Image (tube, rainbow, N blue to C red):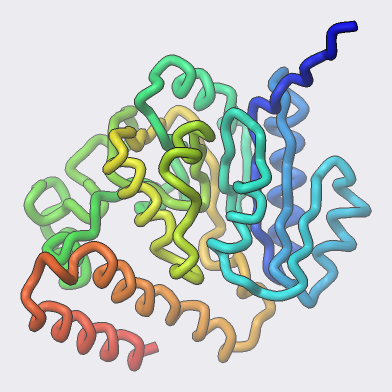
Length: 295
């Protein structure tokens, strides 16, 4: 008797959670209402919990029994948590979704899958990620953060000249946010990845506890010959900075935000330290010390 081959899942959606019970519930509710109940694709959802101290896990098991749960028992960081699920996944596509993302009637992920199916060179695709105001979250539409691009961003030149390529490469604001096109990097808040490409590129770099891991991943996909694609006809809402710090003390919230500046130096060291004179790193280090001191 011929053994029946089990069909792979089309998509696995991975949501990392850390003390985000309120926002995680909204994410899963809206994901179910606006996508899972509509799609004909074979989709599974995995919630990876980073040692939450709230009732997140109880809530997921009680209210969303269709979601798989991976409980890590401690906060191992965003990259490690995602990698636990990524390494175990056998789906054709995997998607990272933050626990503070909300789905709407414009969040049909099947459209993104069709784009990926048609263009095998696309390794990563992102929807248009919006704030509740309707404005774009610029993190979903980025260029490579070279020293020059970072300089123009932090010293507000990009705001002064948003349509000038020389000064606005950090978020590539010279491109049309309402048209589909190639970009250099997107946000891990909503990031759909071709699994076969990931198998060749590798998973997230775990040296990045949180922040910059998505930039680094996109760079590695590009270096492997894959494209990063922005597709604004699919939209999700990002309740930014809620994930991981809801009801947290000011001390914890501050520590969370400081990771952003720490990882900037890590990113520079990995990709640019050998390309620039030593004084560039020294200037960057002192700039980040000043920024962290202002928190």
